[in-house]
Image 1 (cartoon, rainbow, N blue to C red):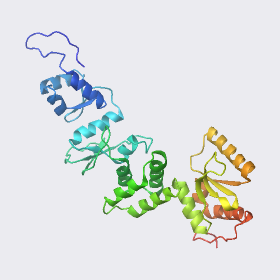
Image 2 (image 1 turned 135 degrees about the vertical axis):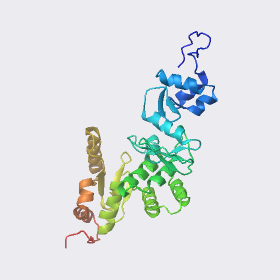
Image 3 (image 1 turned 90 degrees about the horizontal axis):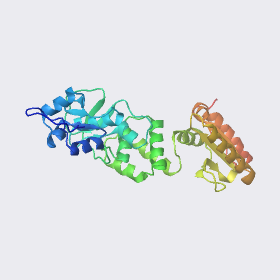
Image 4 (image 1 turned 180 degrees about the horizontal axis):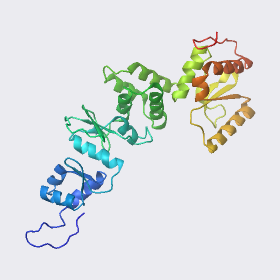
Length: 316
């Protein structure tokens, strides 16, 4: 950031940015605070000159960027505005933790200070949160518990499933975090979702199938995420009756995924004589009673002696 050129007496040298500050800025996605610059010997007049010469760019009061703007740079800037103890939370933390794919337009920052300058880029939430990583963000279990205050059922089920199955979060950590969060709006729901995930219900579509198809219509309890032939895992397996139910929750599979589905269905049929029924969101969410009837017929052919129960949505 400095060019090392010679200077005349009374002229501020152009090589004014110490190496330590350059290293710190790079570690913070090319953003720096005035306090950090001052602490490393860069004075206010020098900071103003760097901004005037467009070598630094003012991001917010007392915060400057020394490189091209990015989402991560704005996240770091929010922490610097928030001050000591500031931590990224909610959707910003979820994005950094790979719970969500898209960076949020508004970056949530928990801070111990009262921030009096509203800015549409950040939402400053006054409160204490433990942080981990760089940039500091709430731990994964805390992120889920915080998001659970406002998330809808399906979104929350997807978050829990992704955290536990893909990111290997111990469900007990979520329960422990809930125990530390009095007056949580959806504590019971979140505990139920964690319990269902431990049973193998790994997403919102699986949860709806269990609730609106299985339980609502009195179907028997299946195995979940089981492997009938030791090579493939299936969503739902009624082992005793030779019936598999696959739930296609994606919007829809890529061609390669469809190919795997076909191979898996054929192997299950040829090697174990298993019947596979396949349903999407449109079926389970839109026509659960019809799905239950079809599954019931397949189970009956496999030897099930039970009978379907009518739910409140079933035609009279």
